Length: 119
Image 1 (cartoon, rainbow, N blue to C red):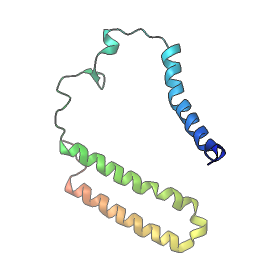
Image 2 (image 1 turned 180 degrees about the horizontal axis):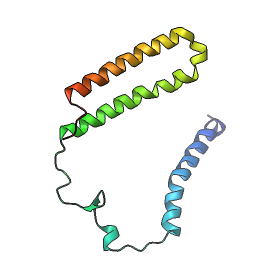
Image 3 (image 1 turned 60 degrees about the vertical axis):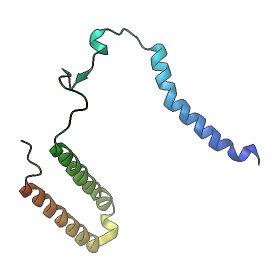
Image 4 (image 1 turned 90 degrees about the vertical axis):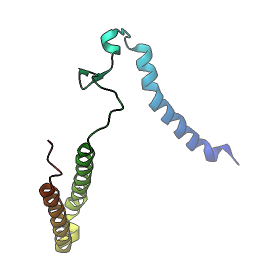
């Protein structure tokens, strides 16, 4: 086995480590370090922590988060479709309209079930 075969891989790993760790080390060495009680205190969204960090969240939070990810990923499929619209023609257009119709039906269903209400 020659080292020449593995040199690009080793170089890639070393550059990756340098790019990942280098800025953190430079920031630690060159950046100002003036810690005080206010900077070192824990906070929640700008407020003092008022409950235990292991408290239970309402399941609606997770439902809204999952719905956001679901619809966000579905919208991400529109970008390649829009870029290749000239190449896929009318059949691609109809296929995407069926996809969007299913997406809208799912959105209306979630809306009617009250999954998007936050009370």
